[in-house]
Length: 247
Image (cartoon, rainbow, N blue to C red; front, side, top):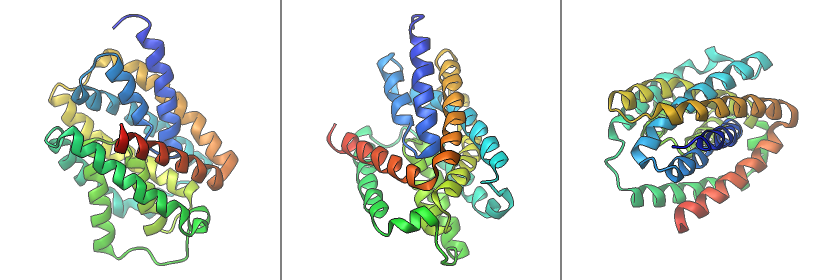
């Protein structure tokens, strides 16, 4: 890679960190940039985990400081998500890229429908009881598998589970989403490191940009609230669905 690659990685990391923290699917940006720079998909998939880990750490700290994250309330969903991420990281590379792209595109379309169905539930949370214990744990275990495997779009799936299953609004849901991403990225990154699928010359500038993007995103979340996040989520999910289904 030449010297001009590094500013591109920082800029792409900023955009990915901003989108990931507020909505999800920001990794589409970082994967595209790394592919453009010649990194194979499996290496890019492992390399971006460094940026995701650090942007999630920044986002978690900021949300906690703002009072939007109560860690004790969500400990019960951390272990299933982490266990799923470990399994997903081991499975990485065993599913064809064509299958992956189409399946994610279909999931994005389904989530887009949910975003327009009873929008007040996304904006205000809901008064329903949380999912029953086993259903709750299975839901986050499955999301963890996906996050460990490829991670692209996992924030959207986490937000869906947190808003519709846990009854959180989008601001609090985003805070918990970032915390969960921090937890399950640690074991996933270790597995990718063991398998030699991390390029540090790309990972470091990408991580710098991602941390700056996450910092800026938490400010926007606190400033504009759930309505802004919902519309950003709609835009991100729509673009992701089109990309994975038709390109």
